[in-house]
Length: 167
Picture 1 (cartoon, one colour):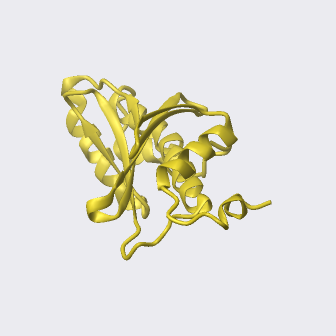
Picture 2 (tube, helix red, strand yellow):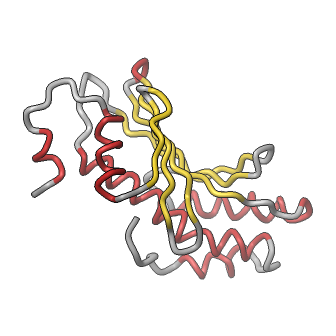
C-alpha cells in the first residue's frame, strides 16, 4: 500500500502530522516540538542526522533542515567554503551551508505548497531521504577538504558515486 493511500479521506491534513506518521513508520526517534514543527534523528552510514521540519503557513512552505556537527580548523575554512560552493553546484534539490557559530553543517530544502496544496507522504518521504542521501554523499568530501588537506576537486571525487542505503 502506498503511503498516500492512508490519507485519502483526510481533509486539511497538516504536513507535520504526515511527517510524524512517517517517523513512526520508519521507527525514527522524533519529538513533536510544536503543532507546526517536528525534530527527528535519522541514522546514516556516517553519522546520525538531526532533521527538523517546520510548516510555515505564511509562505505555505514545509521547511526541512538536516544538520550534523562539524568543527573544521580555522585555517581550513576557505577550503570548506570552496567545497560548499562546489557541492551546491551539484545539488538541484536543496543546498548546504555552514553555521559557524553552532558548528553545524546544514542541508536545507523547502517544499512550496502555494495555493493550498497538500503535501503527499511520498513527497515528504522523498525530501527527507534526499536530505540524508545528500549528507551521506558529501560528508566524506567535506571531511577530506577540511581535515584531509585534499584539494576540493580531489575531495569531491569521493562523492561521484551515489551513496547506498536508505534513510
